[in-house]
Image 1 (cartoon, rainbow, N blue to C red):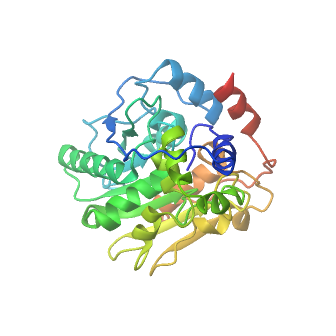
Image 2 (cartoon, helix red, strand yellow):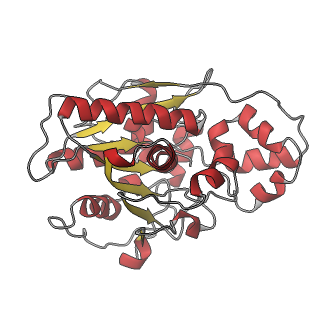
Length: 324
């Protein structure tokens, strides 16, 4: 769902609906995408990456989008990254992209779903974003000569990429899909979402004031129902979700998991109980990053060291960076 630090948005949205704002009636508009190219440094936190991206809008995740990269025998499939809501590829992957590039992968990242008038990507209709992502996968395959790619989606990016795979015919182009903090079955916004959902026009208010993408990631949304019916996986793709039991955005946290045939669902605390990393910190948590790499190549890589991570790590910095 939220990427880049809009932690207060879900509460503000639900409360606005409960206060009975006037419904909006506009249909979801189109969106734009871009391939970031500007060299940029690695980052060690979401707040650090967000601050850099704000003043460098074309920043590419370090080590990504080198279309001269030739996939190796060890890593023959390029990795394509999909970012979260109100975010961009640099903000969410300024740590993962260089880790994978240093490990020998060709890595690619698209900024998708910038709604008209929006400041950030990941705000437009997820169906449109999924088409943009699919077009980018086709470009990566054509440029690298790879028959298939692996995909890592963070938050909304997991849904965008899974929609491409499941509903837009992308399965033959993807070998492995990894959803990090994936809103597979959406969130309840701390219980306020279902209440707001009973108020006529509330979803239109959220879409108009914030983004249609936020509405589409609520538990029980039309888009998620479509995506997960009759099954949330399709044959030919290896699906893995990586979640945290203390996710600040996806509530209940079990909504990260997929239920279809072959799906593997990993929870950080099952593997490292003292690591209480949450939603926003996952793309910068060293254990989570190592787990993503191991999932991409389990024959070569193991888990990283299990060290304590305090509950709420990174959240104060994200809030400060987003609002001040």
